[in-house]
Amino acid sequence: VFQHMFKSECHFINGTEKVRYMQRYFYNRLQDAMFDSDVGHYVGFTPYGEKVARYWNSDPEGMEYTRGQVDRYCWNNYEVFTP
Image (cartoon, rainbow, N blue to C red; front, side, top):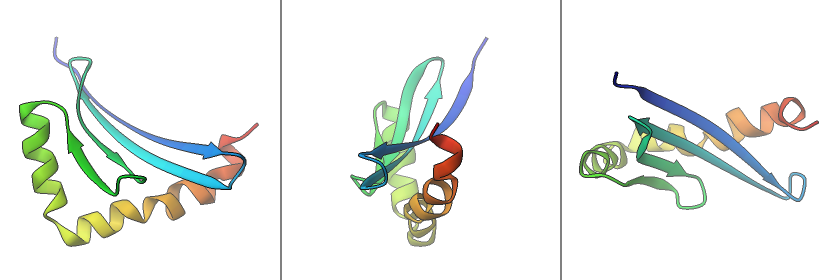
């Protein structure tokens, strides 16, 4: 059985002083690629993940959208994520 999984995460450090957004992509429990708002672009961890990360990083509109997820996804849901 093959499994493909995508996971979005928000990390709030010291309340809302620092917010970090991450998108992680897995295939068969192995992380292929990841976007980290602290890094600002996608990083590949496998040969396939590196190829996909290069493709995603070459799309300026897609990168602008993904970088904006810190505001759209994390900040707007801060009270939902925190106890």
